Length: 85
Image (cartoon, rainbow, N blue to C red; front, side, top):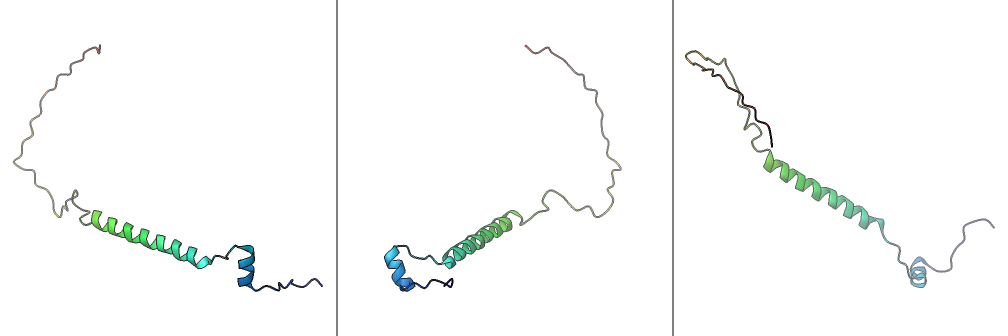
C-alpha cells in the first residue's frame, strides 16, 4: 500500500501531457567544462605573450664592479620657498 506509485503513462507520454521536457544535465556539464577549458587556453596564451622575456629590467651581475677612475661631483643645492597664492 505504501510502495511506489506507478504511472500508467511512460516518461515520453508524460512529457507530452505535461508539456515540460526533462532537460539532460549533460548539456550543462559540457557547457561549464567548455567555458573553463576555453578560459584556461585564453589565460595560457595571454601569459605566454606577456612573459616571453621576464628578465628585461634586471641584468645579471656575475662579478664585482670596478669603480676606480670615476669621479662624482657633489654640488650644493639652494632650497627656495615661496608662499602659494
